[in-house]
Image 1 (spheres, rainbow, N blue to C red):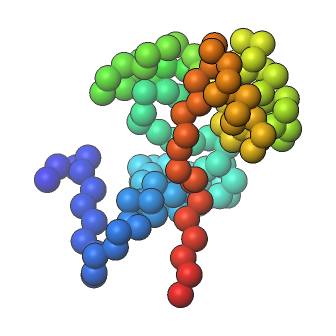
Image 2: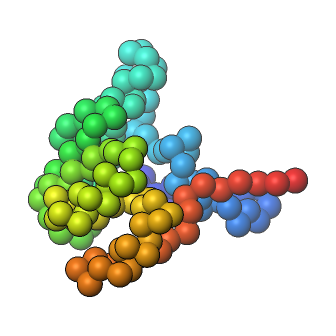
Length: 138
């Protein structure tokens, strides 16, 4: 094992561990970022994220859009496109109109009535996915 490898030793098998490890509560941070965050307040960790992925944060307008740029220092497979823009819209109808007009390349969470519309449009493809929320019932 090297300095860049993290090993988790669980007390018992946990099939939900991969989902838990992907949650923000289990983020792995460099010690210098943790120390800086501890002295400046936890909010700085949210506003100045630390990452090692194929993209880095360029701009974040909360509630409006998030812009990511290709990370030139990424060690793995290079980013496929130079810039990603994620925009928020609370209205499913608005998201569908943006998709149909070609203003966006994809949307998440189409409205329940929009599934049939997307499937019926030869220019669009519906990619079903599992929900992103996990609930445990005891």
